[in-house]
Length: 410
Image (cartoon, rainbow, N blue to C red; front, side, top):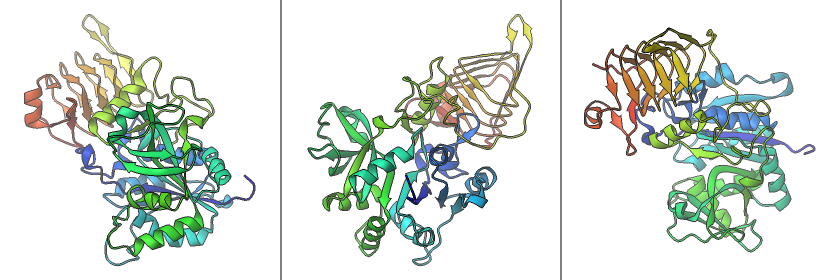
């Protein structure tokens, strides 16, 4: 790439209302995922693995745990000028928070002026995927576009769920950027597919500054990158689409290549965890050539104890983190975070248990997401009686029971 300078901005201000109660006490990008990780780790790992190592993480709502995680975990070599730094709303346009994702970047222009990059990568912080951003950057430079939007191919029937990108005859330049269209036009080489925006953008610096400065003075704008900035740049024929299927990450397999999930709802969050635990996972965390980095607590290995009739400590088709003790209970198709304790005669099935959860004897936990430090009492039934669950807990449209951090269960 020669001397090209690239600055990374990760948008981590999301409130994550649809993930309640998991976001009652934390920002959406700080929500734990996959046992040991937080959602923000995936975007940061992709940038760092792709050698883009000057990164500002723009934070806003309930950002303490996110700020602490970034400060503890993401310490890069300062001698080489590398860094990952959390940046709160700086209120450079008056005493108010970010009005939208475009306003967040606009208020952070001082960071861009300090770095003087040729290109700016603006990535979302709450998707599960692997991607080499250098390959997207090379494509962006080749097209000469002002902005390049990463697009993932999805069935045309799913178009109403996404921001959809329609291209011109060359298949590269964007002709239309549509929000949840009912009648989206199929791709040239695959009429039953469309490009959905992944929320990842690479801008030429001048084009970014020009577009955001113009948007900032528009009182009618919602100041959103996907809703306002990209459509404006499309009208000016400055926008290209990068086909995510052409991105080749070292160590990926035919099973998990091109995997991308928006985990913005409880059902999607649960489904993404179930993608991890099958024998041939749809998304593998075991790719050592493109690791996902995080902070790991200094805990001992997981432990499985007791082997007598009706009381066997075991886990199958599951991921079990450090410090977990499975003491005579049974775990199936589940993800157990560090420090979880499963007591005798209990059953945990198709569930996600976060740090420090304790499951009492003879308890049953099915199709559930249990946040940190929750004690499931002896003999409790979670995910067994839908009516009883709705009286006490949050239950998703798909029937997933969600119990908030530190919630008391009687």
